[in-house]
Image (cartoon, rainbow, N blue to C red):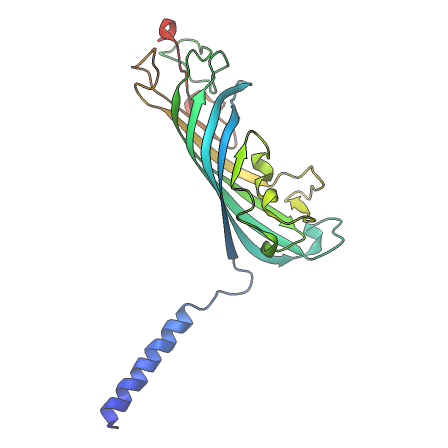
Length: 235
């Protein structure tokens, strides 16, 4: 073998080694073990800032969870079995809403400066949303089953405890305040947007709307917009 050939092989091996090193996992404590679950959600009531359920939603919800590893048991008050695992994650929703005539509109934005009417007609529009989770369990993400719940009809389980339905029996959950035993709320921050495009209102085709239901105020401000869905008498 010539020296030129030997040098070429050595250089190629060095490049390969560099590539391997570049994809090695990060330091201990880094977020790892991504798990996902996609669920079709139908006939889910949607509450607004003015009380009552202003719409019914149909959408696909994708949950993504990350393991932050084992942490001190003080994050899992009263834990009796297993280690304490820190888990974070998000949900992403994409689908449609349909307004419920006669119920209060969701937001406090007005129509042409006037008062805010009740919903007058059924309007269907697009909805998208995200919500974040930060919680602790006595089981690792190995207890997570992303195929466990392919569809949900109605309002249960609540968004704040959504990840719990994908874990095996006997898993305990704690939120960041230490609450557990059914009093935990695993969510942190979120935002949903609802859009009624021009023409979606059969009685008022020139009316459009957009409402943003987001933390920390959850859509109560006039600046958050509204989905008015007025009837012909209130265009």
